[in-house]
Length: 226
Image (cartoon, rainbow, N blue to C red; front, side):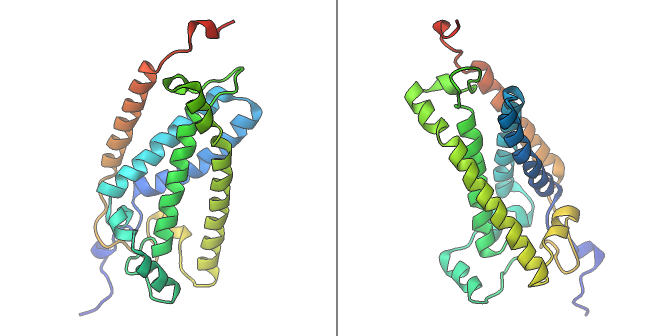
């Protein structure tokens, strides 16, 4: 019997939710930076909250999503990561062992970036929606991390781009095409993709919860206004 997979067996490597969130984050990061630099704080805040929902949705999808989107598929122990660097091939068509941990770390940084933005303040024109949830010293401490975290994220993005170029050019491993089309010749999923509407429901639920929290967030004290 031929080992070549049939059309029915050529499952998506990256499903629609993974791809949409990936490219959405790619758009949100420069847009967030530009709006902050230009002083469009209302738009900046909206973009940051959108980023928060997107990252949280991706983390949830790591638990209930399609085979290669799940943490259990690509998070491996130190021995497996070291073995990969020594030449042992990855056992999954998705993220490599070091790539999986790198992706998780990037999501954690993006989550921290979005959360610190909600308690940020310039003490003049802009105050994050959750700034008054905490004592001002606590909020200011986390707000001070907002810009350094973004700089670290830029470093990770640069490393990610260089890694993609390296694997595409030096190892002839297609990484970009599957993130656009879901699969490429020789790179397919190990099982059927979960319906995309499930991820949409997760995103809507998270957005609803966030909106509810925004509605009950403490308002500035009455003596805050001039």
